[in-house]
Image 1 (tube, rainbow, N blue to C red):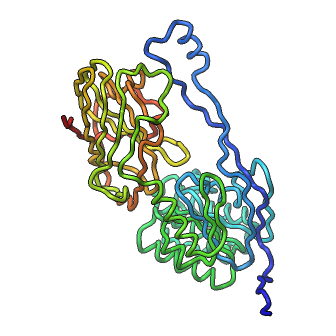
Image 2: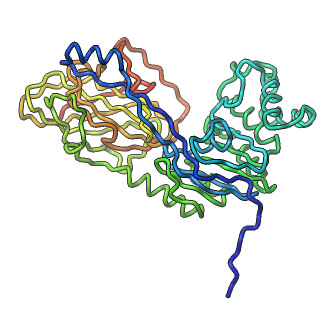
Length: 426
């Protein structure tokens, strides 16, 4: 009988039953015909709180020299897991044991004091990693050379571009000779040449027997760099094993979520709606995969039925990350009139969006009179009328000047998408 192979390498990181809980505050909705008492209660308590478990019951071990990928859709808990491992935040439950020095490169600027210069931040980060001044002195020149910061090393990092900050952060994290190097997809901020340079450095670290943990939506990086992968979905670990199987599972999760046609009539609605109108169906147009490049229009058609006469009807689409966090909102400057019993289709084209790469749920609202207002919603489907994936954010900037609404709600996210056109199909 053939003996079962065992991995006798020492464990360098152990995660046991880890969970992370956040408290989410949501802005309550106020009906348009609210009574005086309802308005008073709303002023006293505008927000409702609820628990959100970003991660729950996560357990795994990493052996010395392993190269682990953590993959999953946006909102699955990947970055939260990296923050727990790198000790930026503490788990709500469970424990994480370390058997080596950890260097992490997560969001741009994490671990940097923006008021200090690049030189001072190199020494600060080195000290955090447990390095002596003599050790940092010995590595300082190689850090500056790799980062390509040059003459700006003595400039406060608050004046750095995001690309410069990324270069310095990666140079520090990778040159300090950590036992565990943690890298998030922040490398996507850098230019192509520097990304290739970073990948070569990570490959060198891996070949030297160090441990690497990385998060990436780019499966070619996962396949080329890592020898094991964990798949997270909605805060749960659903797979821990071979890279190829993890990639297939990850792709399957995304494909199952992206559909181009969906009935909306039976989806739950907010209690305050007055049933003037009803969205019946949504179709995604001109895209069979629901996968978009940054500069590719997002087009869809909404079929709606009027229960009563309704004038000046428009559509608002809110793009949310998988965990429900608002990312952006698209306003359609269209004013359609309906008679009781009319069934019409409204085509919407988000001609230019500014969504970062990732997966999004799309919430839809039918509004009346003014799309830049929440109190005139006549129907709402939130947060999953349909799903999309955005890739390749691109580099071109597009500034929008408008004098439209002064009202801006946190539930709409941080970005407004104004390049939206549409028409009514009788």
